[in-house]
Length: 171
Image (tube, rainbow, N blue to C red; front, side, top):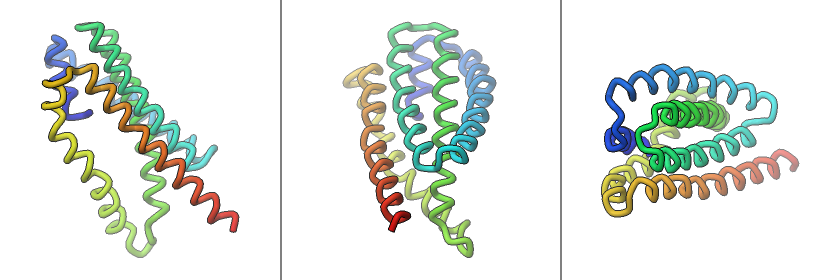
C-alpha cells in the first residue's frame, strides 16, 4: 500500500505541507509508540502472538484508508488514519524483528538478518509496481480493501508458524 499513499493524499486534496506535518509528527510518534508497545507485548505474550496481532492491526488499518477515501479532504481523519497505521506498523515491525532475530545464528546474525529481511521485501516490492494500474482500474476503495485482504495469507502463515513452533517446543 505504501507506494500509493502519496498519490492517494494528492488525489484527496491534501497539500504537501499537511501530509508532511501529519506523517512526520503524528506518524513518527506513533511508529515509536507502536515499536515500544510491540516490544512490551513481545515480552509479555510472546513473539508469535504479537506478530499475529501486528498483522491483524496492519490489515485492519488499511481499511481506515477506505473510510478516509469516502470522507475526502478531512485533516482530522488523516491524522487518525496515519496515526493508527503507523502504530500498527510499529507493533508489527518490532515483533517481526524479534522473530527474524530468533531465526539467526549468533555467529552470522547480521548477514542472515540482512538476507531474511531482503527476501521478505521481494514480493511486496514486485506487487507494488502494479498498484497504480489497480487503482486506475478499480479505484482507491477497492485497492485498500485488496491490501487488507492480502493480510489474510499473512495471518494464516503466522498462525501455522506459531503452531509449528509450539509443536517443536513441546516435543
